[in-house]
Image 1: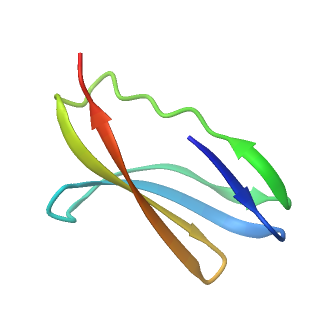
Image 2: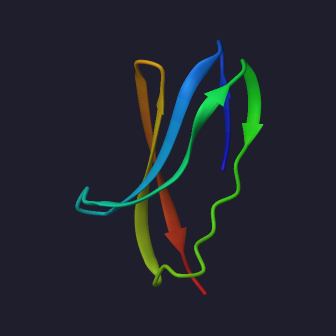
Length: 69
């Protein structure tokens, strides 16, 4: 997963099912301002649509992740 933040922040990346239920937190840590890439291991996830939620400081963003094999 790639993302860009404008200032240093504590970042948390989570995967939720399509109903919004928490599945997994795959990254937590401090990131500097700029572009970042965090690998997402979906090997244990069944095919389907998921929500990726990123919290950076007080900002929360979400996007769709589709697992298809």
